[in-house]
Length: 103
View 1: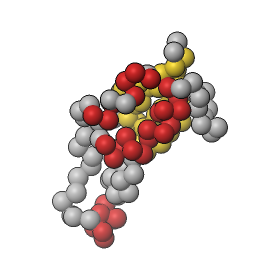
View 2: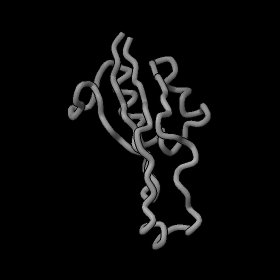
View 3: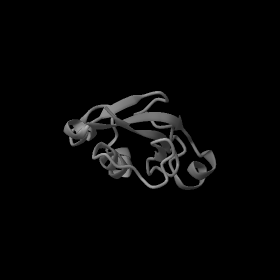
């Protein structure tokens, strides 16, 4: 059975963009921490976005890749069954490592 390991590898904060376009009190993502890890298979795929602390916006950005991996595939640019992707928050993105795992 194929699985996808999701690991938070980086959180960023673009102060210059925040100063120009956002509330100045904006802080780095408060949902994820570097090192957070989630293991997803076909059964858990549809429920992960409802689990705390998974962010629905981040899930929207990465779920297509996760779905591909739990179905046994991977994006064409994967290296060693791994890709990097990120959430769609342009001021304070979170970077995820997605790994395709076959049992």
